[in-house]
Length: 302
Image (cartoon, rainbow, N blue to C red):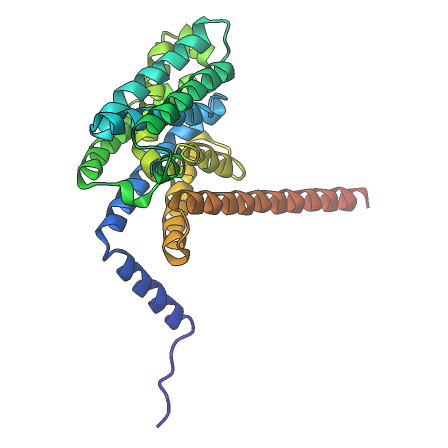
């Protein structure tokens, strides 16, 4: 008898489906994917404003603050998110106040607070649990760190972040592109800057346990920079950034599962690949435009 003829690519599709079914049979992976997709979406939306305002490293600074708060929560045997969220939010507001009303500029203020928080966290951990694998999990993330309560709280806070971003989208747009003009038209720029900082702080805390203190800022920076390679309008950049961030996270989780690599690092690598692909697409597009322009000029001269 003849073997049944399979459509081209059918075997590859079935393999992917089987991998996804196997992945989602694990509860901890389902939790990680749910939280990760929500955090990726929130980080991408906020990242566009932060990158355009040249304040993208706030994510890195706040993640170091979060590292210190996680260490403190561990020492107190308290719920990590309930301890981290208020402290990181206060740190975000403090960073804004220092950069706006002091001689210390934004980058210096971020370095001041982030390094201090990191040092405090390391000392607290060394005096409580000891310098063991917990530090590695805090710094680079652990997909096993998400509990059921963390997932429920993450979903709630992510909904809050997305709702506030949509409701105040026009104000955030105005403050991002021309803060001076927005202030002249009566917009309370300070209030909306604090809103951006508040939403960023929550997003950082939600994603830090899975991505790690050293890698969480990549979710803010990479999708925005990637989208800006091919998109020019604020709305299209924001939508494209959200799409890229979610897809890169999902592919990164699959890669982490298949090759047993750290989740955070896998997601960052996929984001780097996406950035390079978008950059190449922009380069090719510009080259074609230049070629067509030169051809038109040559014809006209002829």
